[in-house]
Amino acid sequence: MKRRTLVSRTLLSGTGLATVSACQSNAPTSQPESSDSSASNLANSSVRWRMATSWPKFLDVVFGTVERICQRVSDITKGQFVITPYEAGELVPGLEVMDAVSAGTVECGHTASYYYVKKNPALAFGTTVPFGLNAQQHMSWLLYGGGLDALQSLYSDFGVLYFPSGSTGAQMGGWFIREVKSLADLKGLKMRTPGLGGEVMKQLGVDVQVLAGNEIFEALEAGKIEAAEWVGSYEDERLGLNRIAPFYYYPGWWEPGTTYEVQVNRTAWDQLPMDYQEVLRTAIAESNLQMLAQYDAANGEALRRLLLKGTTLNPYSQDILDAAYRAAFELYDDMAAQDTAFSTLFDQWKTFRSQVYQWNYVNELSFANVALNRGAN
Image 1 (cartoon, one colour):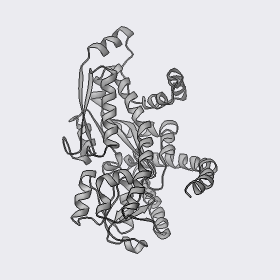
Image 2 (cartoon, helix red, strand yellow):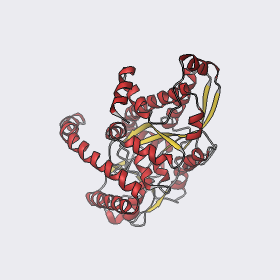
Image 3 (cartoon, helix red, strand yellow):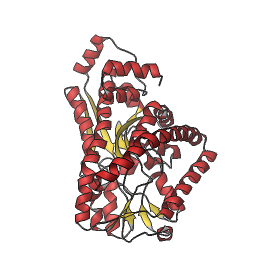
Image 4 (cartoon, one colour):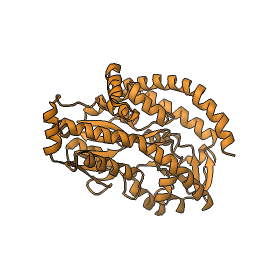
């Protein structure tokens, strides 16, 4: 998107929220309508959509975010544009949301792009990649580093539009039945972890399983897997993972700034009145700001509860972190050599990552080293 367009829209809105909404307007729009036509659309156009999701309803942060989007759309349009959300498995399995949106089985979905890396490995950049960008850096790359344009181009191959819709922040490193003290302890371990993080884990000898959130507890309880990662303390506790696996690891190096997304079927979008396109953009942009704040508020208290219940909190050993880092960038180089789309996006992302890391080393990390070390005591 051209900078002029971004600045213009931001000045018109007067808020940071509209900056996100404006940047998300890379999605194609219909031709401008007269004010009379726009008012008529809002007053008379009744639209009913269905939103498939990858989440169980009881995960009240992520599914609650979905519900807020749908409620906000209905409120603004006074019930004329209604989107009904469905939990994973109600309409389609949690890991098949993109398939349903692409096929037009549903008009939209809320999911994570790294579930679909078998379609194109570059899709992982929409969500997160190992040793990549944190939540703030990722949003900066999307909105001002060319990431959103690159992803929209990638998604167009599937007839889908991409809208970032909330971040978890840096995630935790997973729950384990037994301790993993060194790289050797990962060999043959059956673990649930998706995306390119799962591919890296395979390189370290892990038997990787990809499961939807509503399937993890049962698999862990039944012994089908020996370890699993989900998000962070609050939703991990909601899933009950601490009831099966006593060892909790950090950091979640494979998910440093996980961003979820709303996917919209391109044909459905083109048929949507322009007013409703703007309403949906606004509702999604609001959710994009709210989710991370909600997770940060909830995770600290949840971690305290987990520790009081007997959870053992461990850092990953240095040999695991070093091996994972090497494996991650070897994987990226291999994928770039084999796939032009991945190579183009990876080169752009890598350049931005280097730049923002240098800046955040000076401003964010220097502050964190001073303040967090004191504030945690």
